[in-house]
Amino acid sequence: MKRLWLVILGLTAAACATVPPGPSTGTTGCDVEVRFGSYAMSVDPDLKRRILSIVQNDPGVETSTETPWGREGESTLCVDLDSAAATDRLYGRIEAVIPPYSDRAPTTVIHRDGRSHSAVMPGGSQP
Image 1: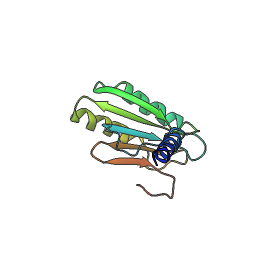
Image 2: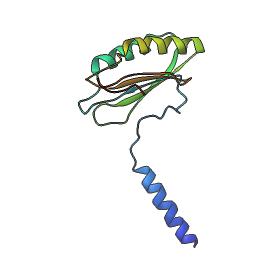
Image 3: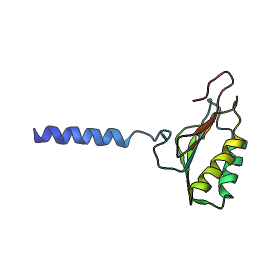
Image 4: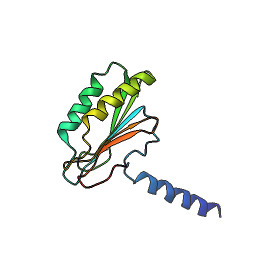
């Protein structure tokens, strides 16, 4: 019986080790999270550059970490800020540059309080 448990534990660990990371579920603890998606033709590079520049130049940013999870440049950017006011400000600035629709790629910004805004495919719906 002991050996069976060791085999099950070993197989479970091996299966977990081979699963690639997926997109964040919003439970990462980020103050502001940005998801750069793709409609099978890569992320929107111009929008991504604009958002990364906003984050880089915001004085309230303490840390930002980008985690790739796709084969076409998809990634999740996790940003931690120094105050609630800074979180609101950055969320608002990013929300303002994400269009409501995009035939290029989906991009989503999520506030730690659950608010979100997404560029969705024309004819699609907001989450």
